[in-house]
Length: 495
Ligand code: SF4
Image (cartoon, rainbow, N blue to C red; front, side, top):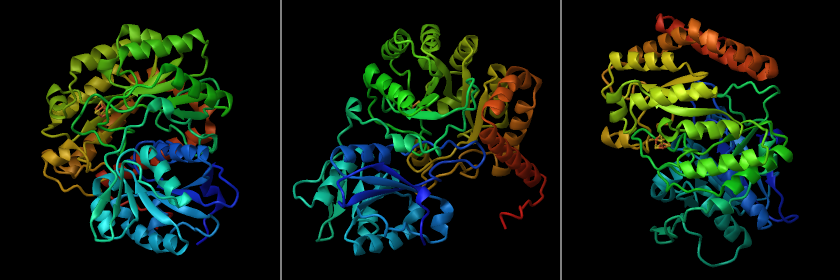
């Protein structure tokens, strides 16, 4: 099959005629089927590509969809002189890897895996011959060095964070991955940034002009360890909390606005305000420089206070995502959130006082959760009235403490799953609770009074995107309602 050229993004240029690196990622890596799915740039591949360009090696990025894999397609390699094909695969892509590896080898290249599955299951992947190399740890820490070494054909040791199969069948390992110095990271390459496919769909904020999203990563890691936290949806799970210099992040944001024409920036750090002093310094830097482009970030309620919120407002922060999870202290404790409902309530009111756009994420079906707990969550959401609320089913993803505690096999559980069996409420019951929650919340008078005007502005400023999002949400609600009523709904198109 011939892949359409539009699916390929040239990340960086290399020497004329020299082999390149082809990064392959899947656009179904996370997602719940219900919530507007963010299309976040694949930072690992994009930053590795930028580092390779600095070393004179070109690279391209190919995004495949779940249906590509189901159909048995492998990337068309004929048009790309790929010395290394680096794939961010999951366990469900094993069949794809089996087909891909001979094609790569036939052309004299090497197949390297990176990402969570590569890190968790490297030995088994290599023993079964699914890849030549597995990156263990952050892609951008090991992939550029590995690709450079393979393409140049030079000898010497592999960079830390790489595993391979030895001729005697043993597993070679270059040692634990060294953390990336955040200040040394390249900027997200402009061809990726401006491609148009990457958008923060979960954050419909009106800014007075069409949204052109920029994405930046500043601080890495998180200093908390919630039991449900998964690297499927996080940039930097359980990695040491590493701060970049405020100047580094500011420079990248400026670059994205001035060179990339971005009108809003999402800072994708897992815990943006995890260090109070850093946050105040960063905000002061933006304020002093007259920063005028809106930006959003994500953090925890207990990492915000009046002074920090005031500084964020002055620095042009337009909104934030916070993990609320539950309105029940008992559930928050079971999740290892180390936060109380009172802190969430008090901080949520302060956030509203400053007028930030808000996206709060909640969960139901957590360990030991009852219907009464779920009602408490709905009541807390009603009280704080965020711009967007997302209710997911608590799911023990493969890499979570929840999965370990429940004795679940570390498989390839990648999508939220109400049937995970970690709470007494049945999957059907959880689906009904969620549907009722959405219907009551989004059609309530308080929600409409608080957010209808903003939603209308967003729709006018971004008509095409907003129409698509609204249609997807309406279709989901309709399907769920029909299913809940015991009717089967199968769209003609899906058939
Ligand atoms: S605070 Fe957020 S990023 Fe940190 S461990 Fe908890 S869920 Fe994960």
